[in-house]
Length: 224
Length: 241
Image 1 (cartoon, one colour):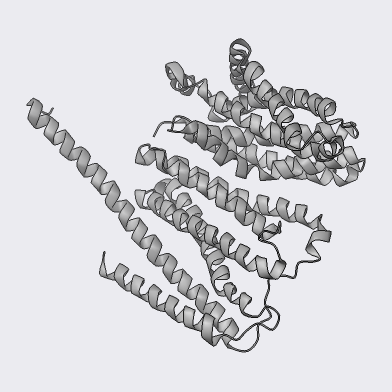
Image 2: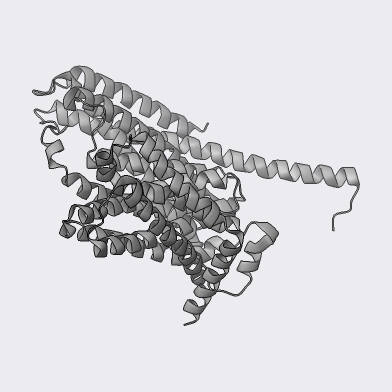
């Protein structure tokens, strides 16, 4: 029970900082939005094409924005030795990991809802298979947030962190990109049965990422 | 350079020269692919070497993490092996591309093996970048060991999802004759086995040389620190406690 309470404590702290600083709301969210617009320019607003590749564009935008969210989640601990504070707060490493991952996941969920609406409006996508869409998004978000948190702490406090995180995270989350895109395609094409196996893959990936994070986080947070 | 290392270097150069003769002159042409198939004798051992290198990196990282076997050497070995692995992964991709052009008609095919290798290349480029971010030896060892093991676990998952994705595009693969070669006679399989042997020797040489260099580098840093401290004590005339 302590684990849950502590995780919520950490997640609450991170989300409170985000609510007050408004970086997620005023920077990451608009970034995702402009990426969607850029795809429109890149692919020419030929609506047929945009609608057809919308799942891939959606997940690319989410992935790019998630890199910002991950970097941000660890940047908030850079000033005033906040990392030392977190380390010495007597919290379990697993709880800190779960809390930070949950805060990132919550921000990504909001981002996905907004970008989802953006895709529907801008690319003229007809929403179908809503259950599959939601399950895919939940499973993918857990995998993204957990992987991002692991690599975020791996790169925290080192030189050139901002440029390192994208290089570490993107190849690692290949399965999320593939699974999310295929499952969304299946849902939008009206053949959800093709999509559920991908959801299983996403769930397995998410579970592994969470386990890896729980195991690796405590030693990574400690100093030298 | 120690005598053993020199011998290893000479042995790998000689075996690579023998490989060149075997692959270009002795091994017969392939019935379907003609001379183009000879890239096999570089492509296959390079790919083997890349996987071997990343396996060694993962094992060395695990040995570093295990408290009883922890030693800086394992960390440096993991780094040295990953460097060699990344170079040969890159070579594998380039040679596969050069081979694919005459046989497949394209430089790049979104084939499961090719795609996984490309992702692998970037995963370990990230690992090497992480190694260069400057931290204490212990801090670097810990971060890199964990990153290496996560990358190693991630590779099969990536491969699985890419394979699955690729099987959905059956229409594209129908036109792709496999690069696999029909082995005939003695010299074709022998040359392939020899190529793997020669590249493994080359791997042993490159990693040993790189490891030795890294150890010297570590020693230099420590010595420089000691000299700097000694200078400081002398110039300030501070009595060490």
